[in-house]
Image (cartoon, rainbow, N blue to C red; front, side, top):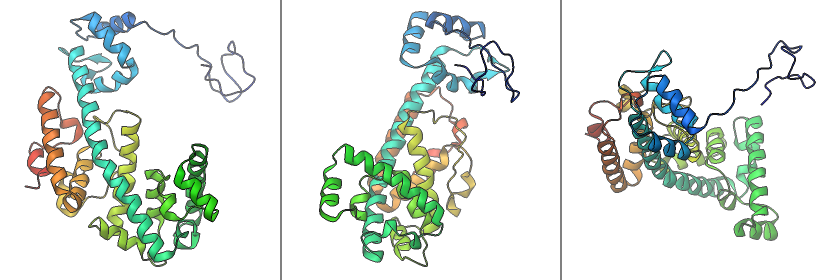
Length: 311
């Protein structure tokens, strides 16, 4: 791909008027060549055929993110094996699945609670009223996102959308939430003006939280959900959208993954405590299955089991 930003520049031109450079892309590597490259950088690969098969399942640059913790100055640390990297990759896939499964019921409850309290406190079309929101420009952008979601739903002939549009000419909030992404719900709730609509406190109360915490947690979980939804790396990731933790959990605050589990724990303690116990058992089995994977890059304390069991 030509990275030159000037429309009329040619590949032969070394620099364009803006001062950027056009550099020829390096040729693609076969799986066998990828293996030779990794070995030249110090990676131990015992079974090259197996490694090639795994590279065919997971792109080289997808795996690249998982060996960052094994690299030293552009080379693999002595003793690093392809199997260790693959073990980290499969651990992350299973960890992501656990987290995603925990977020799903929260997303559904957020939609339900938002629709219920907004409609009862402020009316069926309250989600479209900019006067109920702190930042009118932000609300307008959210409405643009909702319009795109509505357009997709109409093209897909979603029954509740077609029914309400045919009957009322618009979507009341209880129907609109069913086509909203978690991001749209989070944006609307995060922008609610508590002085104009009592729904903000009522929605937070459904989660056993104060509004400022729920706003932060929905925003963070939307970010995490999108990572999981795109099957992106969660392991050893720097969180650019961090949640505000409860004071009792503040000693574990970091830009890593453990705080995500802490806010999930607090939500499940309030909403579905039995489900949380099962989730921790599943997480413990996953960690044991991949015992060679370090939890340090994820911000896990040594006593993580006790912490997540509320001990």
